[in-house]
Length: 132
Image (cartoon, rainbow, N blue to C red):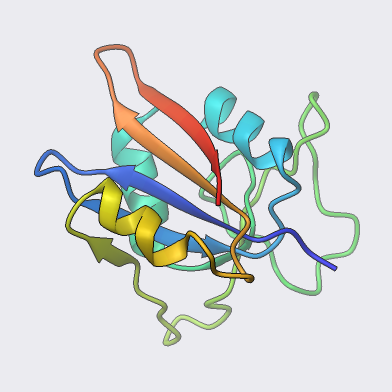
């Protein structure tokens, strides 16, 4: 069984743009976001690429059938496992008007347990984890 989440970034307009993450592992994904996803432009690219199975430390795509996927010195997978396995497959992020609408959408959704919301700061991204 998996722990599922939404990974979201707050846009300058106040809108929330998010993607689905199937294997969340609760604090595992939050720790990856805090440590490795501080570049706002890279994070926007991650969100724009669409739904993921599991988050890695980089945008590099892991193959679904990869044997012994590479980990970094922290024991974190280097590559992100995206759902769009083929170049022509596309899963689009979902945009909500604001954080309140975003939370309302997923609050009682039995398929989404957590939300990781990133807000741009002067030094990177402030990541918050919310239990839904």
